Amino acid sequence: MGGGRPLESRLDAASAVAARSRLFVGAHHPAAVQLQLVPVVPASVLVVDDEPAALDALRRTLRNLPLEVRYAQNAVEALALVAAGVPDLLISDFSMPGMDGLALLQQVKQHHPGVICFLHTSFRALPSTFGVDIPVLDKACDPAALRQLVWSIVDEQLAVRTSPGRRDSATST
Image (cartoon, rainbow, N blue to C red):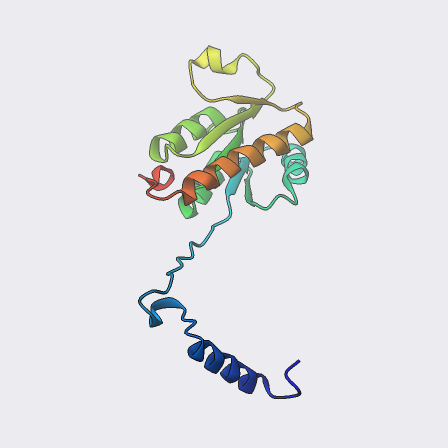
């Protein structure tokens, strides 16, 4: 195809045919359809756990998902990562030295109300004990179920992010 002509020559010929055929793209013709490309930023997840084995298990569970997944070993590290880029989803262990996971999630929600937050813990009575509205993920949950949950949440966040006229509450301060 092209009979051995250089690429530039074939492109010039195609442009000439398009011009003769009145095929216009972009602003070159008033009747041309304008296409607006919207860059899609991958959904991001921040996972926080002070136990290396738990963090590795979560890393294995979430690998190969088309997401930006960042990991932190404590609340201070997590807050620095949030400051560098607000995640769509934050999953934090409850029991950590220094600031616990509940305080971390409450602080993030206060400054970034659009972030979806979950506590990842073995304490099932935690939300009712503290009177908070943060869902709890059981550390013993099935990895496939966790992957599905994470994917459905970030898929919804991406739909909200790319919808026309949306208000960016995830990045409000």
